[in-house]
Length: 343
Image 1 (cartoon, rainbow, N blue to C red):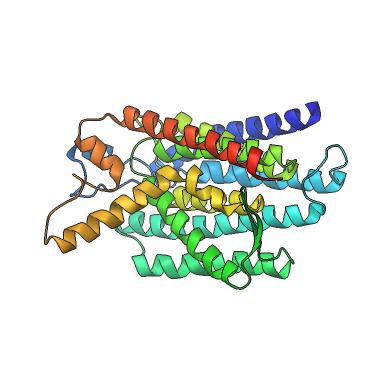
Image 2: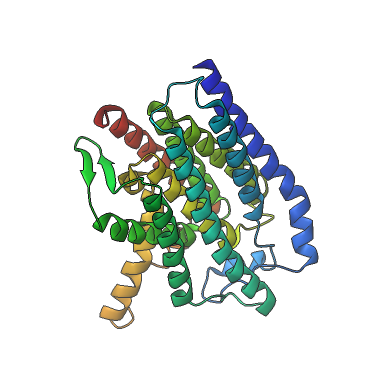
């Protein structure tokens, strides 16, 4: 277990350092390119002070997560996992989940990069259209699921206290919808300094503990890398933010969160662990639906819901703190579900 802990700690520290140090060089470069954020007119008025803050900062944690994950997984494969008991009978299968998951995250990050680049060049807060994003996101999800299918990963999923459930062909349909939904939910959560980075840190720590309980060293190391890289990013993104992750970062994080859930073969964990992401997404859906049904009335002062709390007088730091605590609590619940419900 000592080797197990050292391995995880090294992955987290390495990702933290790469992410934080990359920011030292990336932020000035983005400023020289004039890749700054354009603030929406209908947003909170005090956000106008953030006009021009560099976007695409997500590149710093993308580099860290991918580098550490690839190196740790390759070492894991070369050693054959011989130094620790593993949940996966076939370590190559675990590696498939990891590399396919990185591909899913990178594909979504690329979609976000195209969106951010378009915004930066056109100097407006509108990049790709909603339909363009959805088509590309479903294509990314479809490619990810196809790789898993070709690799023989199967159509079964684990449900705590129920056991293994085989969904057959519906596994691919439901999985694609879940992936695209969660990716966009994470994207919608990005609107307050440090919010997505902080929440995703706690989500990653939860997956690290869950993967550890399942003796999945490869996924544990990747989760640790995600957690460490998010902390490294928060060095630059915590209020007042010196850089924003942009869609490049938020869509990548949405993809990697989904990848971790599928890697431990318990995608249902996205419900409790992604509680804040999902609340953000459904606050937008409810706001739009209520606005149309009532011909102009609003359910919230502003959506996504973090803006509602801003309009109620909450500071950005308070929002991040409360939302992070909620995520941490649901992380504990998720771990207990796996501890007592998965055998």
